[in-house]
Image 1 (spheres, helix red, strand yellow):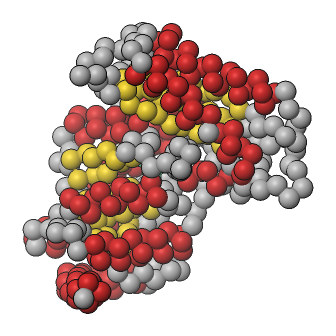
Image 2 (cartoon, protein in one colour):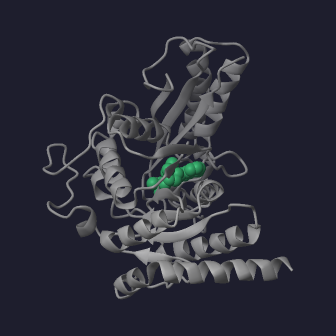
Amino acid sequence: MSRLVSGVRSLSRLISLLSLATASNLATAASRPAAQPSSFQVFRDVPSLRQLRHQLLRNERTVGFVPTMGALHEGHLSLIREAARENTDIFVSIYVNPTQFGVNEDLSSYPRTWDSDVEKLEKLNEELGRSGAPGSGQITAIFAPTSKVMYPTLPPSSDIDGQGSFVTITPLSSKLEGGSRPVFFRGVATVCMKLFNATTPDRVYFGQKDVQQTVIIKRMVQDFLIGTEVRIVSTAREADGLAMSSRNVYLGDRRRAVGLTIYKALKAAEDAYQSGKVSRADILGAARSITDQVLAEQRALTPSERSLFEVDYISLADPNTLDELDLVDPTQGGVLSAALKMAPLEENKPGEDCGLGDGKVPVRLIDNLILQPRA
Ligand code: AMP
């Protein structure tokens, strides 16, 4: 019976989608990438997506927008599930944005997995259609633009002094991640502004995993008077606590095991806060003692056994300004965040799973935990 209901739901949704956007279907059919999804449309350009958006608006439907760079995992899917609870239609973008990668960063090696992304989204749409939950929305559109669409006049520049139209949110962009990635948040804010303009969503969904991004996007929406609501969804983790990330495929077994240190260190700091500590020295000291200990253990191993890393930062900051805190005000709480740079493996062992790129790709891990205000 429930299969029948879900079949009817899918059919009626398909009919309504077809009637909503036949013209845009035709507009995009010729330029679709390889996999051909059936329960949503793929848009490579803005005008046809806008046409769909206007039709949805006229039909009093709501759009939740989930921007991604693809290589989708459960973390991305959890954002879409949340969007489905609050909107009739979900737009997901898949676009690896060049302007947020520094000139020496991993733009060319960033994982691109179009076919499996589409497959995951199709499956999720089936699940959402089956759920039968009242008001459960589904994915209606994937926006997968080319760089020419996103940067129509000047080519996308990653240079600090590069020419182009950029959105800069200061001083938030220069803190934490911005310390070692000076163009990162300029690129993120710029691409999100463009994506928001192309999709005009009722709500946008971002992961807690990238805490600084959430603070910057909220600030951008506020300061630029953008008519959308920003929703933050909690971090999806593997069973042992490692935050899911598209870049984890590069870790391999050895670096993955050592990379978990970032979560253990943040947890130790959180435990210190929860046991009543409020000073920076006490809270971050607990995290540092974990990273120092693991690093000393790794250094004592041979090159074919160890995985070396560098702590880029461990931070205790104000949740709104990201200013570093000497003391946590327990009525306000704080944000604990960290970045580890996992070095390439020095020597591989025969038969070892060293991850995509054979252990040679450096991997930056970031994670954070929110120190909740105490009652
Ligand atoms: P990305 O594709 O890495 O740019 O991420 C797209 C969105 O997914 C961002 O809002 C991220 O914060 C979010 N995201 C990435 N990893 C996770 C995760 N493990 N849990 C929740 N959200 C995530």
